[in-house]
Length: 105
Image 1 (cartoon, rainbow, N blue to C red):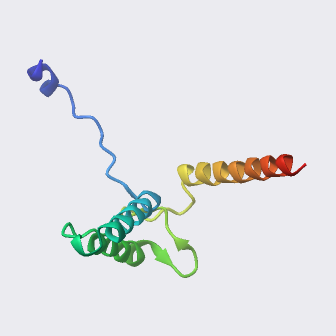
Image 2: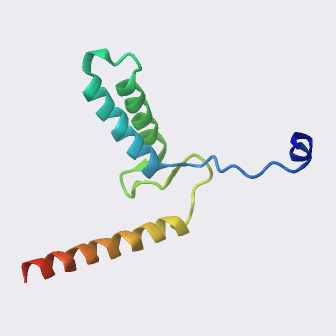
């Protein structure tokens, strides 16, 4: 079975580093560092700050804020996934507001 698998082409692996995912992990590492305090032998805080430095250096712009992904060619237009996230976020905020208004009524 392993020989049959080796004969097939390797599937595509998306190695894109997305800013939103990295920001979420930075938050988790900083929280772990806070919880571990002095016993942070794993270097959670240092790793989180190193990641933030990279994000600020590679994808931050005063004019546009954070980009969508780290590395790779610059995108001229907003990516499809970014647009979907924006639409989903707007729908969620709208739904949340209407739910809050219904509770108050």
